Image (cartoon, rainbow, N blue to C red; front, top):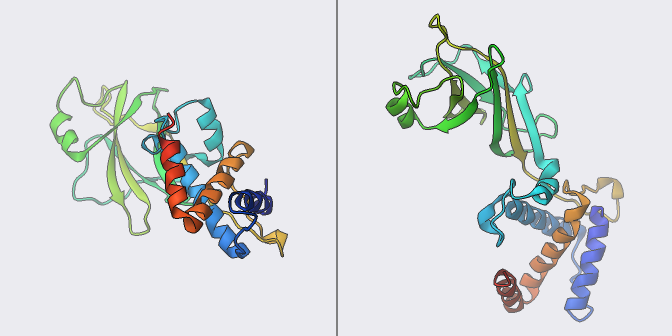
Length: 249
């Protein structure tokens, strides 16, 4: 369904629920309702604590299919920049600092979650796992031969953000047999972007902005929009309906 079709389906559902009287909302108002509904569905699908099945993005294949348009990849040269002149009060041994864009390079949507997965290839084709740690953990474990980085594991440390809102991270590898830092050949991040919102416009269809969600999620967005309208028209009925849904298992 496109955005205008979603509006028509939602109006029919609201009329059935509320004695054939759908609110006379403007398209601008409908756009806000559907954008809110889209965001709620997105948060439910990505956050296992916000849905009764306790499933997040990696919950099952259906969940991955529903979120597929929001799953993106960044790599060195596309959204990830190696900073060769990074100036910091503290530098981690055998580390490289990267700047990661705060916007999706393709859509300019805000990035919702960065590290769904990160993959790294070191010199020589070595492919260690990337373990996120804190600054304090670095200080405790950097000299521990069983915990410090090696060919099977490197560390990622969050360095905050720069003045433009870009994320800064350090990847800590390890020294090779000559004492030189093992270099990073390739670094890729799998991340989630935020929904772009929905625009309804019956008068000028060229202004319509459809949801990024695939067709299998469209009815969920419509139903959530109907819930939002019901909450404003009959808050007590809406509360009872939500409680019954949450307790249904």
